[in-house]
Length: 365
Image (cartoon, rainbow, N blue to C red; front, side, top):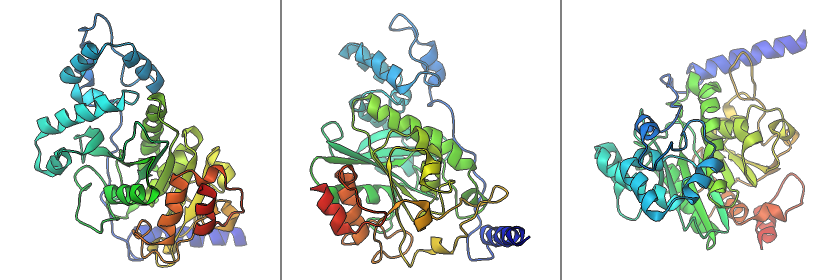
């Protein structure tokens, strides 16, 4: 009876939070963008190379990579020019082709909300203008990097808000840029706003519907990196992005899963994630996410706080980070620890569940 009472109380608390009575903002319901890239219909009909092209929906990234490996440079360029929207978003395509394809797609879009993404020198690894828009950008030399990281952001992120004016470390490209700078030579970092995120903090943010769709996209994206010969990445998951990572964990090729400001990963503990990656967690004392009930009931909530010792993740110090978006701020313990992980610390770290930044950095050397 007591357990039932606690569940009812938790449900009531969760409901009050997501409806705004606890200070959250009500968000509009979003339709998750799923399926193959734009332009798939014409791609499927194309016989310019004498046969069918790999189907963007059913072919695996490994199959796509094998197909492109057999093409001549002239054949690759032909597909690039004829189908930039597919080539730029098809996981398994060589990254150099994807950069060029997305440059063409952005030039063709010529939309004010995406204009900054078309600036010279930017390495856009994915760009889909449908809906609110999806985008991924690379910082560093991805082809030569010994260590690769992917940053998965939370609510209110899309191609249109990607370059919004916030703190240098707040938006996805800022998180990736500061992590790359802190991690140093031999690393590359990808800011991946490649799924439909919740808007505001309402029902979408309190359920796993959008995260489930995002998990499939993240799985395929990371599989595309490894199919293209790149190292398995460390994946940094912020806020609702950690829900995406939690649902994707069992099929995600990753060395590390790092969650920060997480409302939960839809798992009771690390074992429930069914991942071989090392799992890390950070939460600063001023983060409002700490007020979110760590429950999962009737479809609401995301479960155990990953920084709870019972969850079993390795703790990252975040005492000097400020607020929900402060984890990548230069000079913070959390960023120093993130950078050490991005350099490969977890491969040598065998300490207990709580790891200080000095220890992490030492393990990285």
